[in-house]
Length: 130
Image (cartoon, rainbow, N blue to C red; front, side, top):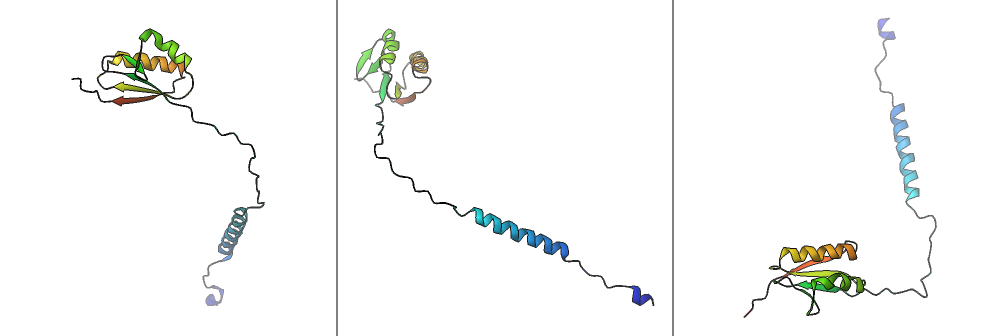
């Protein structure tokens, strides 16, 4: 009599089947989202504007602390006017490694004001003088 009331233990698979069913639905739905719904073909522009890269403005500081543009010396007092007269192009500050730091700082401060802080700093080795 006691043996008739006792049931065999068994695992209920209903929750497992529910989880597998939900995963199948999830993967089927995400696969449909990855496909493009509508192919859009955009026309090419007929009259597009080609922007030319502006020339680079290179200011040099030699080992004596003198300022140069295209091998022509520029006085320290003329630098603010020179930078305001040449607003186009990117500014490259080519500084000799032996140049006084004050000359570099002055030129960098002017470049920050006149170029909104956008400039490139380069260095070059000093040329031995004979």
